[in-house]
Length: 203
Ligand code: ADA
Ligand code: CA
Ligand code: CA
Ligand code: CA
Image (cartoon, rainbow, N blue to C red; front, side, top):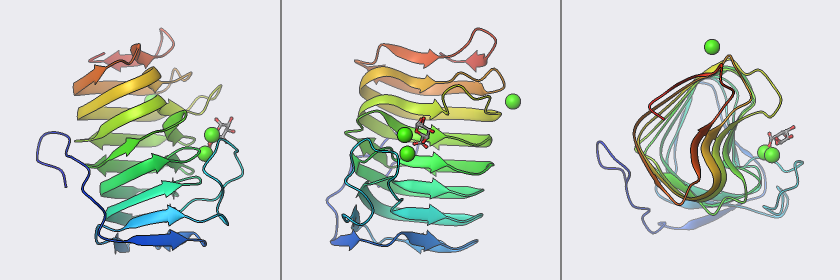
């Protein structure tokens, strides 16, 4: 659950589902996980840092994913606009979410824990808005694809970040914009790592 205006606390899951075949949230569909934990089975990947793992969820354009926890493999892939609400990455796999195609993605509530490196991997442009979120344990919480110009607007608000090795946001893109509002962090060496020409506010 997330309280309005700030991060919430991860509840105990209401049950566990082992996922051995990626769950596809179809265009315009709402998938409500009922508070259960969706755990990647071995068929999707081992949750380590290899790049060939499969996602636990794919969200097709306009899909909504809400009220669940997940862990392992390559997390969530978005294929266009997506809404993610009160979703907790209990134990991040290779990463927790990837924007595979351009779109506007909003993630509200929930959190992510124990990421070896990235939580959010932005490989396509558009926008990414993160609010009322909590993260503990990561390298970069938000990373635009390394060495690429990703034209995206990243907004993070009313969220907290703890125990990060590098930064809350890291980008190599000068066509990205980054805005932090109401963001707190502890034991994270940088809030934003970006080229001088990247438009950054609130950092
Ligand atoms: C790394 C890798 C990219 C892509 C990305 C991802 O950054 O260099 O090619 O695979 O991870 O989407 O996880
Ligand atoms: Ca990766
Ligand atoms: Ca990945
Ligand atoms: Ca831009």
